[in-house]
Structures are given as structure tokens and as C-alpha cells.
Image (cartoon, rainbow, N blue to C red; front, side, top):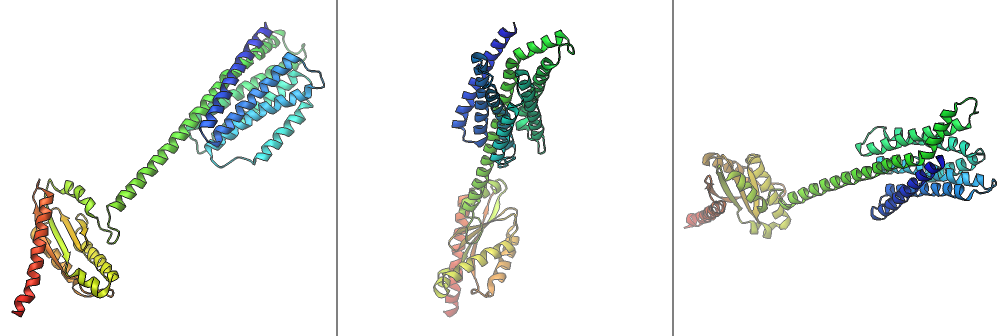
Amino acid sequence: MELLLWRWSTAVQAASLVLLTLFFGLLARSVRLAEVSWWARAWACNLAALAVTLFYWYFQPTPRIFPIVCAAYMLGKTAFVLLLIRAAWALKRPGDPLAPLWRWVAALSGYAVAAAFFTTTIDRLGVIQHSVMGCLLLAGGLLLLRKPRESEVGWLVVGLLLRAALAFGEAVAYALQLLPAASVGPALVERAGAFLAASSSFDSGVEWLVALGCVLALSERVQRELRRSNEGLLAAQEDLRRLADRDPLTALANRRQLPEAFRTFQPHGALLLFFDIDDFKGINDRYGHDVGDDCLRRFAAALGECFRPSDVLVRHGGDEFLVVASGLDDISGHERVTRLREKLRAASETGPPISFSVGVARLAPGGKPDEAVKEADRAMYAAKAARLARPIARRS
């Protein structure tokens, strides 16, 4: 009965491990992450350990070969556990391998060779190997629970701890079979034998839970990275939008921001002031374009000082500037323009005095912004023409 149970249980485990190894192998080819590669190797090692077990039971090698078989089995099973833990830790702490790879390989090889000399029977092999596996799995689960605790490895931790409990249970069952018959009841030994015969199927069930934890942890990791990438793209898009909506010379808004400003101010109306620097071409011709650029920056800075933070200041183009001010009456607008003239009347260390012409128009609540801008533009040109006509009138 135990033999039939063992064969059925082993067949279940073999089919399960073949599926898991194929799945993680294909996953490692499609998802280029170190963690997935380690998991694929882990399941391959587990399958190799099962192949060694099947080889032993079906071919019954000579006692001389038994230590080699034991070493190969222990190497595969222990490598499976260590690779699972290494991959899970890499998922939790990217870039932190816990220990250099050569130390992992050296410790694993030394353990397999040394333990093989003490495993003269299958029962002793079971006690040693399953005790080591239980300790490693328990340590790995507790290691993953260290802070910071990420929810993404939660199911993986559950799987590792359950697999550790099962490994300790198998070690105890093997130990019961090693005890003298007089010290252990026959019924208990019989139950232990039945448990070991079916343990491969139990292993398969818990290992599927471990595999599910691996997939869920990977899914959470990918989703987290996608969220970060999306947030980074949105931030970069916002930065680009701000750069596109800003004049690089004066740091004021450019004409691209006008539609948004008018959508905000249109329901309540606004005062529009259209500015144009007088004889800006002459400044460039006499002093050079560097001084001309400095004049534009000085004018923009003075606008910011004379108008409110809630007002939209726009470099409309060239030497033209537009101010959209909601809730500002004509008298307050005139006072701010006068203050602006006083600020720019004197020459600076880097450039000449700046004079300007301004046209004012009112955007009525619900009115058309384009028409209001054109009206302010026409008023500005009319003011400029009037300023140019004054010297002529004085000379005549």
C-alpha cells in the first residue's frame, strides 16, 4: 500500500515540477529580470533532485555509488531552497545579493560533499536534508519579513514558511523510523511511513503555493515599476508643458497659456493691458541684441513687481507684452501702469531707459477674448501714434 502511495505521490510531484520548470523557464525568457532567472534555476534544481531520487529507486545503484547519489540529491534540493531565497531577497532588495555568488557555491558544494559521508541510509539522509531545508526555508521567510515589509512578498513568505513546516515534519517522520522499534509504537511508525509515502504530493501542493507567491511578487514588482515609470512620464510631460508654455528669455508665460487664462477669467471678465516697448529696434541697433534682451528681461521683471501674483503676464511676441487682470478696475490699472513707467524711466547699469506704449481693453463677462485682445492691440497702436505725434506738434 505504501509503495502504491509513494508511486502515485512521486508521479504527481514529477508532473508538477516539469510544469513549474517549463513555466519559469519560459517566463525567464520573456521577462528579463534577474529574479526570474534565479527562480527558473531553482525549479530546475528541484526537478534535478527528483530525477536523482527516481534514478535511485528504479535502478538501485551499488552501495559505492550511494554517497554520490546522496550528494547529488542534497545539492539539488539545497540549491533549490537557496535560489528561491536569493531571488526573493533580490526582489525585496534589488542589487543586494546577501552574499557573493562564490560563497553560495562553495557553501553548497561543501555541504553536499560533507553530508554525503554521514548518510549511510535513506532515513538518515531524510533527517539531515529535510532538517537543513526546514531551517533554510524558515530563515528565508523570516528574512523576507524584515522591515521594510512589502506586501508583494506576502504570499511567497507564506509558501516558504509552510514548506519549512512540511520539511520539519518529514525530518521528524524519518527520525521516527531511525529510532529503535522498542522505543516507538508500531502505529506511530506506520503513520510516519504513510506520511513519507504521500509527502511528495504534499510537497507539490505547497510548492505550487510557493510558485504562486513568486508570480504574485513578480506581478506586484512589475506593477510598481510601471506606476513609477508612469509617474515619471507624467512629471516629465508636465515639465515639458511648463517649458513649452514659458518664454525662455523672460520666464513669463507665452501665448500658449492665453487660452487657459481666458477660460478661467472669461466668466467674470478681466482687464487687458497690451504693452509695446518704444523704439525697441533702435535699442538693438544702437546697443546690440544682448542689451535688447536685457531690456526685455527688465521689462518682464518690472511687470511682475507692479502687477498682482494672480494676474497673468504674457510675452505676446517680440517686444509686446499682455497682462490679463481679473477684478482690476481702470483706475487701479492706470496706477500700476504709472508705477511701471517710473520703474523703467531711469537707465540701468546694463541698458538705457525703457519707455512703452500701452492699450487697455475690457473683456466683458462671457465676452470674446480674441476681440478683446485685438481691441487692446489697436488701443496700444493708437497710444503709440499719439506719443510719436507729440514731438512733431511741439516742433511745429
